[in-house]
Amino acid sequence: MIPIGDDNYGRTTTPYVNYILIALNLLVFVIFQGAGNNLDFTYAFSTVPQEIITGEDLVTKDQIYVESSTGQQFTVPGLQPTPISVYITLLTSMFMHGGWAHILGNMLYLWIFGDNLEDRLGHGRYLIFYLLVGLLASLAHVFASVALGDNLQIPSLGASGAIAGVLAGYLILFPQNRVTVILVRVVTQVRAIFVVGLWFVLQLFGGLGTLTGGSDGVAYAAHIGGFIAGLVLIKLFDSNRSSRRSFT
Image 1 (cartoon, helix red, strand yellow):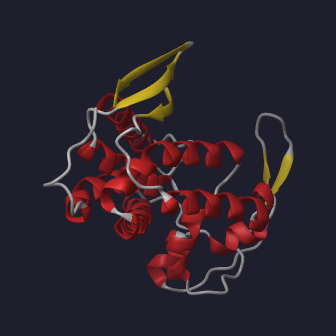
Image 2: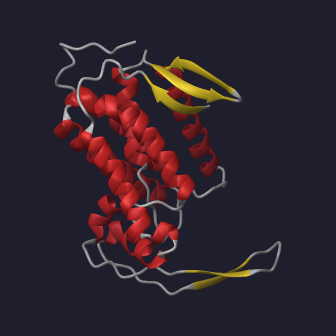
């Protein structure tokens, strides 16, 4: 199920902040990350759990790995010096991505669901909400990495945690909105509660998979943490909840 649009006829403002967030993510990925090829930049400004826990910058050497099935060798770059406080990487990592599929998927969800939330909350509140749930999502990933005994030197990056918070806010404020989705080969409309609910269930199953030893490189704890943060915080940011209703 791939969402491609939602109800926007009740929106009354232009979502400038949402547009800027999307533009910043694309700018960082294309210009600073070199469309995923500038690994030195990526490994310098991503969130590394061990750095967040200790407060100290960590620099490691490149490592050579051998693919067991093919015998092919490849080099994994080491962590690079971070020219800022390591704690600020909790913010910078939110604007970097691992590849085109990663960023396009994230920006699609942000484009569809972020504008209505910004219209409801207002530009300033929406920006603060987005950054706050993103930061809490990154901290959830750090906490989960420690609790599960994961490798604390593996960097984490991406807007997925913040967007998970946006989805949670959308779910609470606009549960009956119709979302246009591609379902197999059919384009149809379903309620937002089903689209967002299915997304969260998939994150839960993915997270449970990591508990049993499986891993596909996705920071499910950040997704789940961002979603829960959005559920908890959205009502605090919704200053218009008594005077406005979700549109269907």
